[in-house]
Length: 635
Image (tube, rainbow, N blue to C red; front, side):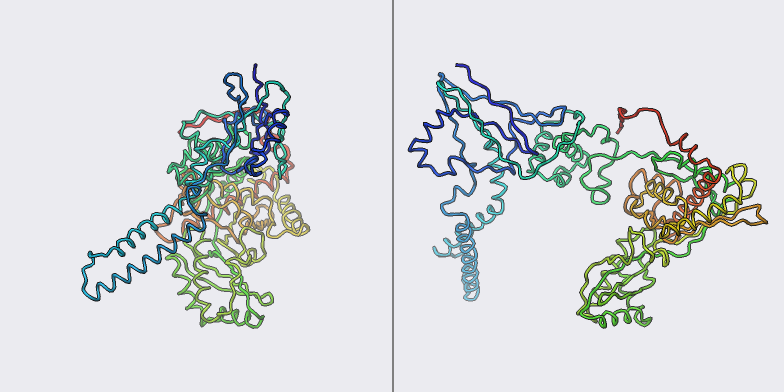
C-alpha cells in the first residue's frame, strides 16, 4: 500500500510545528490498551523544550517571507504499521544514582570535610616532625575522596553545556513520525499549540538573496537562529569580526524573512569598531560626503567635508563660503571650553542638601576638589562647580577642560572621584545618578544656552554690498529685515530654545557625521543665534553666529575610524594637538561655526530672493528610479 506523506509544517513566529498524522482506529485501540493506560501522562505526551532544539530538516526560505519545511516519510517494511515513540531527551544528570540536588550536596560536603581533615592532619605532622609522604589508609582514602569530589564539582559547572550538547546530538524532539493504519486511512491532525504572542506579518517581503556559506558558518547560523549561540558573542567566539558580522547578517535575514541586499558588508574594517563604536554590526551605511569651500576663516583656508543626503545643502553652504571668501573671510573666537557633568544626590532634608551646596561653592574647598577631580586624567582640569537645589535633592554641575577629546567619559570619571571623596564629610549623601540632566547632554536646555557646554564660539564676517547683489542675488536691507522677522521674532513666537537661526543644525549634523562626532549631540551643538546688521551707511552687512555649546573632539569615539579620520586630516585637525592640548578640538569647533555662518548667509539670501523652492526643485528632486540599484563593494 502506498503511504501518505506527512502534511507541511505550520509556522508561528520562529518555531515550527509539524503536523501529526494518526489513524483514529489505531488511536482508539491503543488508548484502551492497559500498557498505555498504565503509562504516566508525561510518557504519552513528553514535554517540549523550545529553547535549544533546532528545526529539522533545515528551513527553506520562500519569496513570500514565510518559512517552509521539508516533508518527511516514515519507513514501512513488509507493509506493516510502525509507530515511533518519542522519549524525553537524555540529560547528563540521568546517570546519577540520586537526584541532582542531593548529589551536589553530598559532594560539596565531602569535598570541604575531607579538605579540612587533610589540612588538620598536615598541621599535626608538621608539629610532630612526621614526614608528609607517610600516609595512613584513612589519609589515602581521604585523598582519593578529595580528588573524586573535586573532579565532580569541576564537571558540575559544565553540566548545562553537556546537557545542551547531548540534546543537540540526540536529534530533533519535534520529529513525530506518521502512524498509518492499513485498514483505516483517515488521518487525524494534531494542531500546534496556540502562540502566546501574535506576530503580525509584514506585507510584500522581498526575496532573500544570500551567498552560500561554508559548512562551519552554516552550522553557526543555525545555532544563532535557535538561540544556542547569542548573537552578541560571535566576535569573541570566532575571533573574526568580519565573519561574525556576515553570520549575524545571514541569521537576521532568515529569522525576519527580509533581504538586506542593499546594505553593504564588504569594504569595512569591523575590527576598528569592536568595543568602541557599534555592537552587533551587520553592515554599514553609505552617506555621500561633499566638500564646501574653501572656507576662509582666521586667515586659513579649509575644505569642509559634509556628510549628508539632503540635496542643495552642500551647494548652498559652498555659495556662502564663496561670498565670505571674496569679502575677506570670517573671524572666530572661542569664548569658553569646558565639558560638564551634573550628578544628582539626595539627602534626608533640604537643610543637608543646602550644606553640600555651601561646601562645594566655598572657594576654600575648590583647590581640594580640583586635586581630587584631576586625578582622573592628565588632561582633565576642573574649572568650576555649581550647585542648585530642588527640595532635598542637589544637582551639582562640574565643568572641566578635556584636551582634544569631547570629554564625556573624562568628566564622568572625575565626578566619580569627587563623589567618593564627599562621602567622608557627607556620609548620609545618597547618589541617585551620575547624570541628573543638569549637564545637560543631548537635550535642548537653557543651562547650555546660558552657561555653555563644550566649546562656546562666536564667528563673524562682513559681506560687501556688491557681493550680496551679485553672488547672493539679494540686498542688504532684505537680509536684515528677514533675519529680524524670521530668526529673531519668528523663533520667539515659536518659543524656541536656542533656535534663533535658519538651519544651523543642517550644517552641524553634516560636519559631525563626516568627522566622527556624536550625531545626537547635534541637539545642543546647534543652539545658535544669527545676527545681521547693515553697516557702512547700509552698503555692507555684518553677520555673526553665536554658538554656546559646540561639543566636538578630535580623539576617541568615531574620530578613529578610517573615513572620519580622513575628513579630520583634510581639515588639519586629526588626532591630539602636539603643540597645545585642546587646540585641534577648538579649531574644529570654529570650523563648524564658520560653516554654519556660510550656510546661514546663503539660505537667508535664497529665502529673501524667493529662490528656495526653485533651487530645491532643481537639486533636491530626482526623477531617476534607483530603487532597484545595488551596491558593489570592494575590499
